[in-house]
Image 1 (tube, rainbow, N blue to C red):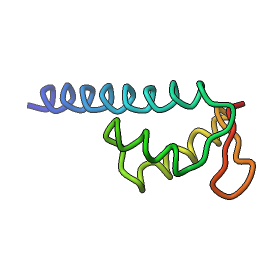
Image 2 (spheres, one colour):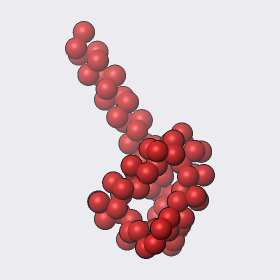
Image 3 (spheres, rainbow, N blue to C red):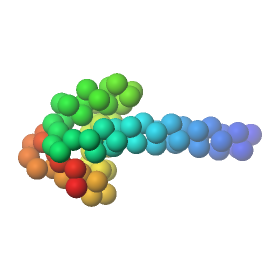
Length: 76
């Protein structure tokens, strides 16, 4: 049974990556965006508010986006 759990885990990760990619694709269409704008898009693709905070932090750490002021971001 561990094999089945491993496969389910991979499916979950693939779905998560697709969701993150949808958000990142949207971000790439923007010169600047607010967290509020990102939250609207995030909810459209099924991302919760708290999860968005984590995603934005990871995107900043990966140099995909830059925080320019409180609640305001730009793509890098």
